[in-house]
Image (cartoon, each protein chain N blue to C red):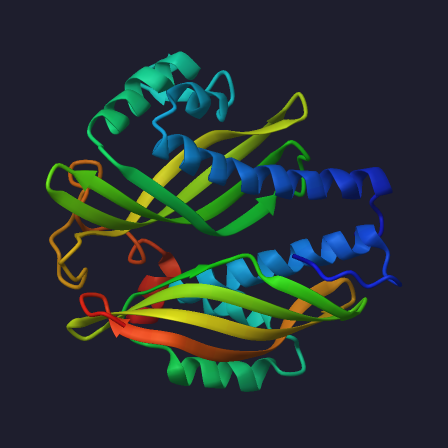
Amino acid sequence: MSELTREERIERLDAYSQIRDLAVRYAAAMATKDRETLGLLYVDDVRVGGGLTGRDALREAYFGATLDRLEISVLHAGTHVIDLDPERPDRARGSVYTIAQIQHGERWIRQAICYFDRYAKRDGQWLFISRDHQLFYGADFDQPPNDLPPANWPASDTGTGTLPFGWPTWAAHAS
Amino acid sequence: MTAVSDDLDPLDRLESAEQIRQLVARFAMSYDARDLETIAGLYAPDVRDGLMATLLERMPKGRTFHLTASPVVTFESADVARGDVVGRSEAEAGDKWMVMGVRYADRYVRIEGTWYLHSRALERLYSSDVLARP
């Protein structure tokens, strides 16, 4: 730390602050189904998959499908680990726990999620490069999450997810 | 969020508060991932072995999920701080799924520029099966 200039130290604090806000902005925009804002949280050349890039493609291909199948969706972003890239001051990674409450018609579902994020700084603004959504579980209101079949999210919003099983440290500890 | 101590450099205090926030978040996630190496590195070296032994003794077999809020940090000096962390934790316990409202009273120390967890006292505000009322 001591070799950094005062200006660089302030920039690092600004990075943490902006990145933390990104996760909260995402949650708020999902709750209000604000596709315009959701797109603006990503880099303008965001990779959408299937050879598509850009915010409009993301809004249509990803958020369109996701928001259309949800009625009420309330996301609460919590525990957020942020790792600034020691080599590149314009890159960072993060993991964000999020609890989601979702309405599907008569159903009321809660999910425990971890997003694995990559961030980039463009023109002074920190943005998502990508968000990898991994599910701990999704369960109906009156259902314990203990022994659910695999969710294979996004195929199903309920079921057992990929976490914590996908963490190599979990597998090593459990064995 | 962060109590003001007039004699501390504001920039240093902001950096310390950020490091402590990261410490709290990393601890919660590393615990859920059973990443013991990372957890050990977050404990202050002088208390590490004892705290790890206690942690391992109490570590549940089932899945856990620790959602923590941003800690309230109060600085006692430039290198010692207390934290008040409110969280919601979940734990798989056999055929039950427990949900707990928790509060941690933490103490952090800074050694050679890095903040560590020195002690943590857990208070359970409630503990209840997910399908029951607390």
